Image 1 (spheres, rainbow, N blue to C red):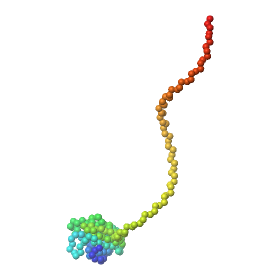
Image 2 (cartoon, helix red, strand yellow; image 1 turned 60 degrees about the vertical axis):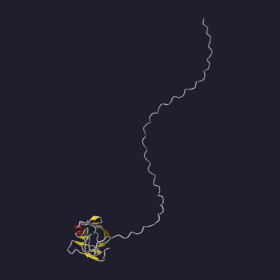
Image 3 (tube, rainbow, N blue to C red; image 1 turned 45 degrees about the horizontal axis):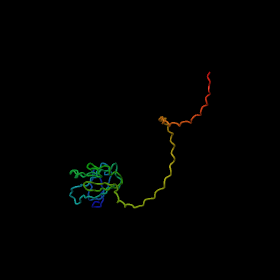
Image 4 (cartoon, rainbow, N blue to C red; image 1 turned 135 degrees about the horizontal axis):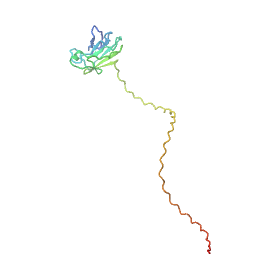
Length: 195
């Protein structure tokens, strides 16, 4: 947090920008002009400076829209002109802010936390984030019951008849048969006389 805990209401006062001072911890967007995309909120210078309060890593500010005056894309966030003239690149949420980080403050009635991370890097959080809770140590639940069996699928179509197969090779010649039994003896011949 910033060194002091006091609120500053930002009104345009004829200017199109306002530079965040290190002597305040909260800034309230005070009118429709400040809440518009034509207005710029200028970051504190990241290096140098001769004031009593110096920008250090971890400093943070609240920027809020208590009255719901943010409209359109809301005001842009820009790099301080001292950082620009000294060629110091300043980032907000990973984007270079030299020409303006646009659309980050566009939700009416919201609060934002701007944190200086060091080395020219700022992080802007909507509403901020609380501390992470402890890790739970629950037990694993029981296994659920087995599901029901699904319905039987449809029978598929009968396939086409395949082509006729090739004729097989000729078989081997069988073994020679056994010799048959001897035949009966024929009748006795007649004697024929010749004259």
